[in-house]
Amino acid sequence: MLRLLPRRRAAAVVLTVATLAGCSAQAATRVGSGGDDARARDAASSFLREWVDPDGRVVRRDQGADTVSEGQGYALLLAVAVDDRATFQRVWSWTAAHLERPDGLLGYHWKAGSLIDATPAADADTQVAWALSLAGQRFRNPGYTDAARALAGAVVDKEAGYDDTGQVTLAAGPWAVIAGTPVVSEPGYWTPAANAALASLTGDLRWAHLTAADTGHLRRLTSNGTALPPDWALLSHGAPRPTGSPDGGTPAQFGPDGMRAAVWNACTVDGRALLARLWPLIRGTADQAPLSRHLDGTVRQAVQTPLSAVATAAVAYAAGDPRRGHDLLGIASTLATRYPTYYGDAWAALGRVLLTTHRLGSCL
Image (cartoon, rainbow, N blue to C red; front, top):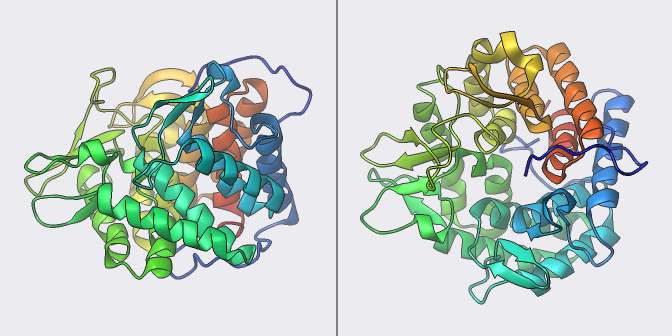
Protein backbone atom coordinates (compact mmCIF):
# COMPACT_ATOMS: atom_id res chain seq x y z
CA MET A 1 0.00 0.00 0.00
CA LEU A 2 2.76 2.45 0.79
CA ARG A 3 5.80 1.26 -1.12
CA LEU A 4 7.59 4.25 -2.64
CA LEU A 5 8.50 4.29 -6.33
CA PRO A 6 10.15 6.89 -8.54
CA ARG A 7 7.88 8.74 -10.93
CA ARG A 8 7.43 6.59 -14.04
CA ARG A 9 5.01 8.66 -16.05
CA ALA A 10 5.08 12.24 -17.27
CA ALA A 11 1.67 13.17 -15.89
CA ALA A 12 2.18 14.25 -12.29
CA VAL A 13 -0.37 14.17 -9.57
CA VAL A 14 -0.78 17.76 -8.50
CA LEU A 15 -1.67 18.13 -5.95
CA THR A 16 -15.41 17.25 3.40
CA VAL A 17 -16.46 15.27 4.67
CA ALA A 18 -19.72 17.24 5.20
CA THR A 19 -21.44 18.42 8.32
CA LEU A 20 -24.54 16.35 8.92
CA ALA A 21 -26.64 19.23 7.65
CA GLY A 22 -24.53 19.83 4.59
CA CYS A 23 -23.88 16.49 2.91
CA SER A 24 -26.50 16.66 0.16
CA ALA A 25 -25.41 15.88 -3.37
CA GLN A 26 -25.58 19.39 -4.74
CA ALA A 27 -23.61 20.41 -7.79
CA ALA A 28 -19.94 21.00 -7.06
CA THR A 29 -19.34 24.51 -5.74
CA ARG A 30 -16.19 26.56 -5.48
CA VAL A 31 -14.95 27.11 -1.92
CA GLY A 32 -12.04 29.23 -0.82
CA SER A 33 -9.82 30.44 -3.63
CA GLY A 34 -10.20 29.43 -7.24
CA GLY A 35 -6.71 28.00 -6.93
CA ASP A 36 -7.86 25.59 -4.20
CA ASP A 37 -10.67 24.30 -6.37
CA ALA A 38 -8.45 23.97 -9.45
CA ARG A 39 -5.78 22.07 -7.51
CA ALA A 40 -8.39 19.70 -6.10
CA ARG A 41 -9.90 19.06 -9.51
CA ASP A 42 -6.46 18.48 -11.04
CA ALA A 43 -5.50 16.05 -8.27
CA ALA A 44 -8.72 14.06 -8.62
CA SER A 45 -8.52 13.94 -12.41
CA SER A 46 -4.86 12.91 -12.29
CA PHE A 47 -5.67 9.99 -9.99
CA LEU A 48 -8.43 8.83 -12.33
CA ARG A 49 -6.12 9.07 -15.36
CA GLU A 50 -3.16 7.32 -13.78
CA TRP A 51 -4.74 4.54 -11.76
CA VAL A 52 -8.02 3.64 -13.52
CA ASP A 53 -7.83 1.32 -16.53
CA PRO A 54 -10.19 1.82 -19.50
CA ASP A 55 -12.48 -0.95 -18.23
CA GLY A 56 -12.99 0.84 -14.89
CA ARG A 57 -10.63 -1.18 -12.71
CA VAL A 58 -8.45 0.76 -10.25
CA VAL A 59 -5.06 -0.92 -10.62
CA ARG A 60 -2.52 -0.84 -7.80
CA ARG A 61 0.41 -0.73 -10.20
CA ASP A 62 2.84 -0.37 -7.30
CA GLN A 63 1.57 -3.59 -5.69
CA GLY A 64 1.49 -6.21 -8.40
CA ALA A 65 -1.37 -4.80 -10.50
CA ASP A 66 -4.09 -6.02 -8.15
CA THR A 67 -7.33 -4.28 -7.16
CA VAL A 68 -9.09 -3.72 -3.83
CA SER A 69 -12.65 -2.57 -3.21
CA GLU A 70 -11.34 0.45 -1.28
CA GLY A 71 -9.69 1.73 -4.47
CA GLN A 72 -12.91 1.39 -6.43
CA GLY A 73 -14.63 3.47 -3.75
CA TYR A 74 -11.99 6.18 -3.85
CA ALA A 75 -12.27 6.41 -7.64
CA LEU A 76 -16.06 6.64 -7.49
CA LEU A 77 -15.89 9.47 -4.94
CA LEU A 78 -13.31 11.36 -6.99
CA ALA A 79 -15.30 10.85 -10.21
CA VAL A 80 -18.39 12.32 -8.54
CA ALA A 81 -16.30 15.18 -7.19
CA VAL A 82 -15.21 16.25 -10.68
CA ASP A 83 -18.54 15.38 -12.36
CA ASP A 84 -16.89 12.72 -14.53
CA ARG A 85 -19.94 10.65 -15.46
CA ALA A 86 -18.16 8.42 -17.96
CA THR A 87 -15.45 7.36 -15.53
CA PHE A 88 -17.98 6.86 -12.75
CA GLN A 89 -20.01 4.52 -14.95
CA ARG A 90 -16.95 2.52 -15.98
CA VAL A 91 -15.71 2.16 -12.41
CA TRP A 92 -19.11 1.17 -11.07
CA SER A 93 -19.77 -1.29 -13.90
CA TRP A 94 -16.46 -3.06 -13.26
CA THR A 95 -17.08 -3.07 -9.49
CA ALA A 96 -20.56 -4.56 -9.80
CA ALA A 97 -19.43 -7.17 -12.34
CA HIS A 98 -16.30 -8.37 -10.53
CA LEU A 99 -16.63 -7.64 -6.80
CA GLU A 100 -20.33 -7.92 -5.94
CA ARG A 101 -21.20 -10.91 -3.75
CA PRO A 102 -24.56 -12.72 -3.54
CA ASP A 103 -25.30 -10.94 -0.24
CA GLY A 104 -24.88 -7.52 -1.88
CA LEU A 105 -21.54 -6.65 -0.26
CA LEU A 106 -18.27 -6.31 -2.19
CA GLY A 107 -15.39 -8.74 -2.12
CA TYR A 108 -12.18 -7.05 -1.08
CA HIS A 109 -9.32 -8.34 -3.26
CA TRP A 110 -9.18 -9.09 -7.02
CA LYS A 111 -6.12 -10.14 -9.01
CA ALA A 112 -5.29 -11.77 -12.33
CA GLY A 113 -8.85 -12.30 -13.44
CA SER A 114 -10.54 -13.47 -10.26
CA LEU A 115 -11.69 -12.48 -6.79
CA ILE A 116 -8.96 -13.98 -4.62
CA ASP A 117 -10.41 -12.77 -1.31
CA ALA A 118 -14.18 -12.31 -1.17
CA THR A 119 -14.12 -10.99 2.41
CA PRO A 120 -15.87 -7.59 2.45
CA ALA A 121 -14.27 -4.43 3.87
CA ALA A 122 -16.83 -2.21 5.58
CA ASP A 123 -15.12 1.07 4.67
CA ALA A 124 -15.15 0.28 0.96
CA ASP A 125 -18.75 -0.92 1.04
CA THR A 126 -19.85 2.24 2.86
CA GLN A 127 -17.93 4.62 0.62
CA VAL A 128 -19.13 2.94 -2.58
CA ALA A 129 -22.72 3.24 -1.33
CA TRP A 130 -22.10 6.91 -0.49
CA ALA A 131 -20.62 7.60 -3.93
CA LEU A 132 -23.59 5.90 -5.59
CA SER A 133 -26.01 7.99 -3.54
CA LEU A 134 -24.23 11.17 -4.58
CA ALA A 135 -24.12 10.12 -8.23
CA GLY A 136 -27.78 9.18 -8.23
CA GLN A 137 -28.70 12.75 -7.32
CA ARG A 138 -25.98 14.65 -9.13
CA PHE A 139 -26.23 12.67 -12.37
CA ARG A 140 -30.00 12.14 -12.07
CA ASN A 141 -29.57 8.40 -12.40
CA PRO A 142 -32.12 6.33 -10.42
CA GLY A 143 -30.13 3.17 -11.10
CA TYR A 144 -27.28 4.49 -8.97
CA THR A 145 -29.76 5.44 -6.24
CA ASP A 146 -31.24 1.94 -6.21
CA ALA A 147 -27.76 0.39 -6.07
CA ALA A 148 -26.80 2.72 -3.20
CA ARG A 149 -29.90 1.78 -1.23
CA ALA A 150 -29.29 -1.95 -1.71
CA LEU A 151 -25.61 -1.76 -0.71
CA ALA A 152 -26.36 0.48 2.27
CA GLY A 153 -28.91 -2.05 3.52
CA ALA A 154 -26.41 -4.88 3.23
CA VAL A 155 -23.79 -2.87 5.15
CA VAL A 156 -25.93 -2.15 8.20
CA ASP A 157 -27.41 -5.65 8.17
CA LYS A 158 -24.06 -7.45 8.05
CA GLU A 159 -21.25 -5.03 8.98
CA ALA A 160 -22.74 -2.98 11.82
CA GLY A 161 -22.16 -4.32 15.31
CA TYR A 162 -23.11 -3.25 18.82
CA ASP A 163 -20.98 -2.74 21.88
CA ASP A 164 -22.22 -4.06 25.19
CA THR A 165 -23.98 -0.78 25.98
CA GLY A 166 -26.11 -1.13 22.86
CA GLN A 167 -24.26 1.50 20.80
CA VAL A 168 -24.05 0.71 17.10
CA THR A 169 -20.72 0.88 15.28
CA LEU A 170 -19.38 0.15 11.83
CA ALA A 171 -17.21 -2.93 12.31
CA ALA A 172 -14.26 -3.95 10.15
CA GLY A 173 -16.46 -6.37 8.20
CA PRO A 174 -18.89 -9.26 8.78
CA TRP A 175 -16.06 -11.31 10.28
CA ALA A 176 -15.73 -8.72 13.06
CA VAL A 177 -19.35 -9.00 14.22
CA ILE A 178 -19.65 -12.21 16.23
CA ALA A 179 -22.24 -12.57 18.98
CA GLY A 180 -20.70 -12.70 22.44
CA THR A 181 -17.32 -11.27 21.42
CA PRO A 182 -16.03 -7.68 21.27
CA VAL A 183 -16.64 -5.86 18.00
CA VAL A 184 -13.41 -5.39 16.05
CA SER A 185 -13.33 -2.01 14.36
CA GLU A 186 -11.09 0.43 12.53
CA PRO A 187 -11.78 4.07 13.45
CA GLY A 188 -10.60 5.05 9.97
CA TYR A 189 -13.70 3.30 8.60
CA TRP A 190 -16.06 5.69 10.40
CA THR A 191 -17.26 8.17 7.76
CA PRO A 192 -19.79 10.70 9.11
CA ALA A 193 -20.70 12.21 5.72
CA ALA A 194 -21.50 8.78 4.31
CA ASN A 195 -23.59 7.94 7.37
CA ALA A 196 -25.67 11.08 6.95
CA ALA A 197 -26.15 10.60 3.22
CA LEU A 198 -27.19 6.97 3.62
CA ALA A 199 -29.50 7.77 6.55
CA SER A 200 -31.27 10.30 4.34
CA LEU A 201 -31.41 7.88 1.42
CA THR A 202 -32.68 4.84 3.30
CA GLY A 203 -34.53 6.22 6.32
CA ASP A 204 -32.75 3.53 8.35
CA LEU A 205 -32.15 4.82 11.88
CA ARG A 206 -29.02 2.71 12.22
CA TRP A 207 -27.25 5.00 9.76
CA ALA A 208 -28.56 8.03 11.63
CA HIS A 209 -27.17 6.70 14.91
CA LEU A 210 -23.75 5.68 13.60
CA THR A 211 -22.15 9.12 13.59
CA ALA A 212 -23.04 10.03 17.18
CA ALA A 213 -22.12 6.57 18.44
CA ASP A 214 -18.79 6.39 16.64
CA THR A 215 -17.89 9.96 17.58
CA GLY A 216 -18.40 8.88 21.16
CA HIS A 217 -16.29 5.79 20.60
CA LEU A 218 -13.54 7.94 19.06
CA ARG A 219 -13.67 10.35 21.99
CA ARG A 220 -13.16 7.50 24.43
CA LEU A 221 -10.45 5.84 22.32
CA THR A 222 -8.48 9.10 22.30
CA SER A 223 -9.14 9.86 25.99
CA ASN A 224 -11.00 12.97 24.87
CA GLY A 225 -8.27 14.16 22.55
CA THR A 226 -5.19 13.38 24.62
CA ALA A 227 -4.12 10.40 22.45
CA LEU A 228 -4.24 9.80 18.70
CA PRO A 229 -6.85 7.54 17.04
CA PRO A 230 -5.59 3.96 16.69
CA ASP A 231 -5.62 1.88 13.54
CA TRP A 232 -7.63 -0.82 15.32
CA ALA A 233 -9.96 -0.95 18.32
CA LEU A 234 -11.98 -3.43 20.35
CA LEU A 235 -15.38 -2.31 21.60
CA SER A 236 -16.41 -4.03 24.82
CA HIS A 237 -17.27 -3.42 28.46
CA GLY A 238 -18.52 0.07 27.63
CA ALA A 239 -14.94 1.21 27.12
CA PRO A 240 -13.47 0.82 23.62
CA ARG A 241 -9.73 0.29 23.70
CA PRO A 242 -6.93 0.60 21.14
CA THR A 243 -5.37 -2.62 19.95
CA GLY A 244 -2.78 -3.86 17.50
CA SER A 245 -3.69 -5.33 14.14
CA PRO A 246 -5.53 -8.67 14.27
CA ASP A 247 -2.62 -10.43 12.53
CA GLY A 248 -0.15 -9.14 15.12
CA GLY A 249 1.82 -7.23 12.50
CA THR A 250 1.63 -3.84 14.17
CA PRO A 251 1.05 -2.60 17.73
CA ALA A 252 -1.56 -0.03 18.65
CA GLN A 253 -0.52 2.96 16.54
CA PHE A 254 -1.73 5.99 14.59
CA GLY A 255 -0.92 4.68 11.12
CA PRO A 256 -2.36 4.37 7.62
CA ASP A 257 -5.73 3.25 8.98
CA GLY A 258 -6.15 5.52 12.01
CA MET A 259 -5.02 8.56 10.04
CA ARG A 260 -8.13 8.30 7.90
CA ALA A 261 -10.22 8.91 11.02
CA ALA A 262 -8.73 12.40 11.25
CA VAL A 263 -9.71 13.24 7.68
CA TRP A 264 -13.23 11.79 7.71
CA ASN A 265 -14.04 13.44 11.06
CA ALA A 266 -12.71 16.90 10.19
CA CYS A 267 -16.06 18.24 9.06
CA THR A 268 -18.52 17.61 11.83
CA VAL A 269 -18.75 19.98 14.75
CA ASP A 270 -17.98 17.28 17.33
CA GLY A 271 -15.29 15.71 15.20
CA ARG A 272 -13.56 19.04 14.63
CA ALA A 273 -13.58 19.83 18.33
CA LEU A 274 -11.99 16.49 19.10
CA LEU A 275 -9.35 16.85 16.38
CA ALA A 276 -8.42 20.33 17.61
CA ARG A 277 -7.33 18.81 20.90
CA LEU A 278 -4.94 16.48 19.05
CA TRP A 279 -2.95 19.31 17.47
CA PRO A 280 -0.47 19.79 20.36
CA LEU A 281 0.49 16.10 20.08
CA ILE A 282 1.72 16.41 16.49
CA ARG A 283 2.25 20.11 15.76
CA GLY A 284 5.98 20.05 16.45
CA THR A 285 6.63 17.20 14.00
CA ALA A 286 3.78 17.87 11.58
CA ASP A 287 6.00 18.51 8.55
CA GLN A 288 7.72 15.14 8.97
CA ALA A 289 4.51 13.37 7.80
CA PRO A 290 5.65 10.01 9.22
CA LEU A 291 4.17 6.68 8.18
CA SER A 292 3.09 5.97 11.76
CA ARG A 293 3.12 7.50 15.21
CA HIS A 294 2.77 6.15 18.70
CA LEU A 295 -0.56 7.12 20.23
CA ASP A 296 1.16 9.86 22.26
CA GLY A 297 2.12 11.58 19.00
CA THR A 298 5.82 10.66 18.86
CA VAL A 299 7.12 9.36 15.55
CA ARG A 300 7.20 5.56 15.21
CA GLN A 301 8.14 5.06 11.52
CA ALA A 302 9.76 8.06 9.90
CA VAL A 303 9.23 7.35 6.18
CA GLN A 304 7.02 10.13 4.79
CA THR A 305 3.61 9.49 3.26
CA PRO A 306 0.94 11.73 1.65
CA LEU A 307 -1.84 10.39 3.89
CA SER A 308 0.11 11.37 6.99
CA ALA A 309 0.44 14.94 5.69
CA VAL A 310 -3.26 15.05 4.77
CA ALA A 311 -4.35 13.72 8.18
CA THR A 312 -2.16 16.28 9.94
CA ALA A 313 -3.59 19.00 7.69
CA ALA A 314 -7.09 17.99 8.80
CA VAL A 315 -6.05 18.37 12.44
CA ALA A 316 -4.43 21.75 11.71
CA TYR A 317 -7.57 23.06 10.01
CA ALA A 318 -9.71 21.83 12.92
CA ALA A 319 -7.38 23.61 15.36
CA GLY A 320 -7.80 26.91 13.52
CA ASP A 321 -4.45 26.92 11.72
CA PRO A 322 -5.43 27.02 8.02
CA ARG A 323 -2.02 28.26 6.88
CA ARG A 324 -0.37 25.17 8.34
CA GLY A 325 -3.11 23.00 6.86
CA HIS A 326 -2.47 24.47 3.42
CA ASP A 327 1.27 23.88 3.75
CA LEU A 328 0.70 20.26 4.79
CA LEU A 329 -1.51 19.62 1.77
CA GLY A 330 1.38 20.96 -0.28
CA ILE A 331 3.69 18.43 1.36
CA ALA A 332 1.22 15.67 0.50
CA SER A 333 1.19 16.84 -3.11
CA THR A 334 4.97 16.91 -3.30
CA LEU A 335 5.30 13.42 -1.84
CA ALA A 336 2.66 12.02 -4.20
CA THR A 337 4.46 13.50 -7.19
CA ARG A 338 7.92 12.38 -6.08
CA TYR A 339 6.92 8.88 -4.96
CA PRO A 340 3.76 7.81 -6.83
CA THR A 341 1.72 5.11 -5.14
CA TYR A 342 -1.92 4.19 -5.53
CA TYR A 343 -2.69 4.91 -1.87
CA GLY A 344 -0.64 8.08 -1.62
CA ASP A 345 -2.05 9.53 -4.83
CA ALA A 346 -5.61 8.69 -3.77
CA TRP A 347 -5.25 10.47 -0.45
CA ALA A 348 -3.42 13.48 -1.87
CA ALA A 349 -6.45 13.95 -4.13
CA LEU A 350 -9.07 13.16 -1.49
CA GLY A 351 -7.39 15.53 0.96
CA ARG A 352 -7.65 18.40 -1.50
CA VAL A 353 -11.27 17.61 -2.33
CA LEU A 354 -12.46 17.01 1.23
CA LEU A 355 -10.62 19.80 3.03
CA THR A 356 -10.64 22.69 0.53
CA THR A 357 -13.77 22.36 -1.64
CA HIS A 358 -17.51 21.73 -1.58
CA ARG A 359 -17.20 18.95 -4.15
CA LEU A 360 -18.22 16.21 -1.69
CA GLY A 361 -19.84 18.52 0.83
CA SER A 362 -18.64 21.46 2.91
CA CYS A 363 -15.68 21.27 5.26
CA LEU A 364 -15.09 25.00 5.71
